[in-house]
Amino acid sequence: MEQDDGKMTTEEMVALIRDGVPVRGGVWADFGAGTGNFTQALQACLGDDAVLYAVDRDERALRQLRRRWTGPNTLHTLTADFTQPLTGLPALEGALMANALHFTPFTVQSAVLAQVVSYLKPGTPLIVVEYDVRQRRSYIPHPVSYGRFEDLARAIGLQDPRRIGLRRSPRTGQSMYAACALRPSG
View (spheres, rainbow, N blue to C red):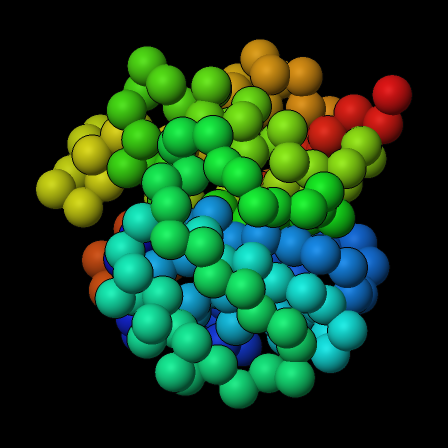
């Protein structure tokens, strides 16, 4: 599902998300991984001992990710629609959704976020990368501005929603943000 990061370097993606990764290693998932641009950035943040799950409904994109995977990390790919309940995922130490939530209709965004958060261990982060826009565009059918993300995060009980990165999209010129919120510990 990733769409806009084709011209961002891995280093730029790492800079965008790294402040949401509290510790190296662990088991993480990238929901809406597409061909894995942000999956590779996540790998760089997590180090060699992490286990990564890339979830996307596009098997061709996941095949491309598997072909270009260069990390020593274990990569599992799961062809599935993350907006539906998933099986086969372990409890996660973190999750990433990069340029994926804006493909989910407004009416179900909170339910989808809650479902993704249900795969997380208590006290662990959800990182979201989205465009900071309010108006629909052809490539952003259901925008999730930073303010909307804060509202969604609080509505489903996430703690400490905060912006961790900001940049202009190299392809569209639109402002992009990375944000992080924690699944409650209790």
